[in-house]
Length: 299
Image 1 (cartoon, rainbow, N blue to C red):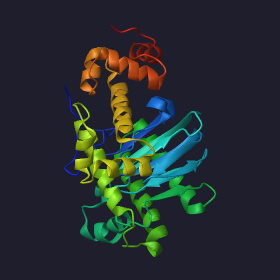
Image 2 (image 1 turned 180 degrees about the vertical axis):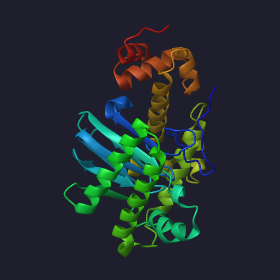
Image 3 (image 1 turned 90 degrees about the vertical axis):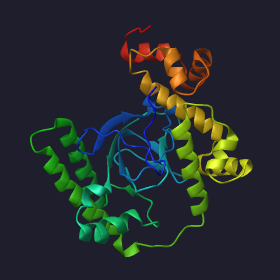
Image 4 (image 1 turned 90 degrees about the horizontal axis):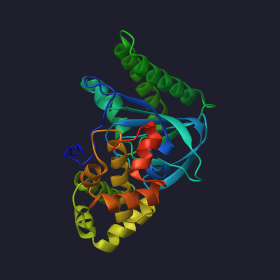
């Protein structure tokens, strides 16, 4: 049984495109996620989402924003976020993740340009509008990074690093006058949420109780539920179930795993209950999902 990999702060380890070059760049559909909703998550990487077709609702630290075709969004380090369909319509988008540590080998660059962006609590995100010059330039840079990652031509890593430096300069140059070290009033709730989400991501394969989730955030049961409702508009148990379903969809891509094995690896008590929950949320059984996805029947 393979466990999800987490860092010491309970943020998830990113599955980059390359084992020895930490860049994630993939094109995705919202329909690839249970209920057209990605699980709320966070990490130290900078994340960029570009809307290719359709539209997407996007939650950052409990507040939702609407992204239209052609727009994008920058999510800063350690911010809780997820995309979802607000009206049931599908959306095609590019997702790019890059760790700021790629630019942190030189102390001067790290302390002068990288850390001020990462620690800027006044800018947990930016919505990128193509009609604004510097943001249009960022969108072009991100599309070039995606293309380079997928073509993998000779020297593409150097080209990506060059573009990443330009991207970092644009971010720093356009927010430096607004950098603030002030904490927001919701910081304690966000910290508790980080810890509770991290606990779920680390232990979703086993039995988890509401008391254990609350204890991870150092809050009582009622406060735990209130925080989840405030930030995610759902209960802790609903989030746990959705997270397990998202992980089960990843495992359904592995033909050698049976539905029962997947159910147990994702924390469900058995294949019958897993199938019931899967059908209720996805609209088909795990076996049907597998068949429809790959047009192949697996035992």
